Length: 134
Length: 175
Image (cartoon, rainbow over all chains, first blue to last red; front, side, top):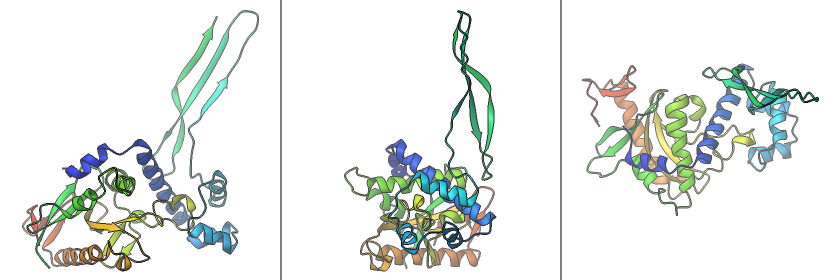
């Protein structure tokens, strides 16, 4: 059963809103889970970050925008990963001159999440050949 | 307080069923009334309403359930959505401190939430916000009534199906 109003509005929700809300929720759950597991309060975290009162005030009032550096500081203090960017790892880019063979091979890594536990990276079984020039 | 009915508003998520309140003689339930106000694209709060709806049905309803993480804004008996951000973490402020809308609700369990009405937060407190004051007080009354009926066993939780029933097991609940 679904409210007709909800149904109409969900149909009009853009992908960026969906992604933003999903990431936002993941960050809340992730940070709270880490703080709880490490028995840290939010104030402990601010102390660990060594912020000046004026700077903490800005954080408190949301005057700072998201920066990669602030996430890096948080990850460093918490000792845990908050954001993961899927990457394609090139494992071979070998070119043999002399008219024989050129291979470009990538191996995809996929993230598998188990409930609320930290995500686990695993190697995908397939190897994708990008080029094979004989 | 007038009579009202508890009816399912959204139950298509895997984690949580959402109920709403339908007042006696009303044409529209309280939660539809809230979202309808912001449904037009021309509304300045249109995107905010879509984000709040997404938080409810996709994140709470389907992904996580009604965890404490999303219900940290208790306002007397009722609660308000969205949750307060982790205030030391600027990354999650956008949908918290600066978010202009509030939707009141009553969390029965991690699997059942009753949604009420809400409005635009324009002042430091709900009671100082013209658009919220009445909805805030009304939500407290709804929540108090539901909590009381649950304490007396008149409303019961069907944990298997994530449903509320009356004391006879009926799914139509009139208060």
